[in-house]
Length: 249
Image (cartoon, rainbow, N blue to C red; front, side):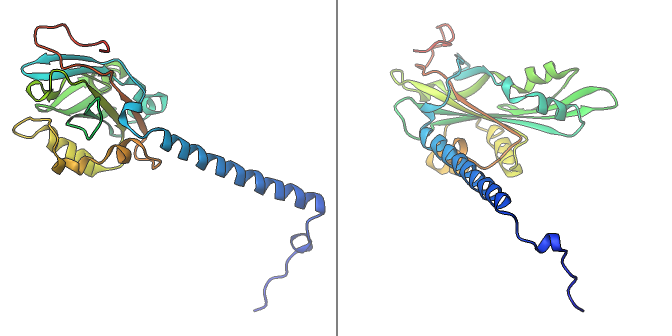
């Protein structure tokens, strides 16, 4: 069979003015693409250490020989995430807090918490499964505010054994929050980490399964519906008799 005939309009060359407009559009598109790549590269270059994360005031105290942390990350639940919460589909909010020495180096401890939220369309309540130090618990929230209280903040979350901290050493916590993480394997690892029998949060060189700072915090790959990351203020290890160390040292 012979090929279908092309219409004169399709085969006719573009007039010079049209060709110039097309060339400009291609050039502008290429420029914008290069600018976006350059901006991404600059952002990646700017954030080389966890100390460069945006600081968020965090409350630290000692309870039962553990240093505990209280901080909110409600900005992880924006309007788009709230709509997903009300859709009836499962929503997961996973938080990881890495304890670093203020002098640098690898993280020395890791605390984690995850929430699975499902809106019960029949009963019109949010059914929540919380996984954190101590195991799994379930609860119910009647509105989004209840979801935020349970899943978009941590209250007295154990982050490290006080005895493992040096009195004269300052520390800070680098926090990564992901809403609907792509990696189901990572959620399973978080669950196994926080439900270990010994309950320790201390990290060793063999605990690299949670990734490097660059791999976790400096990434261009979309790994979740929403990511929020920040660091606490630097703090000296709090003592059991002192007031909570909620201000910078």
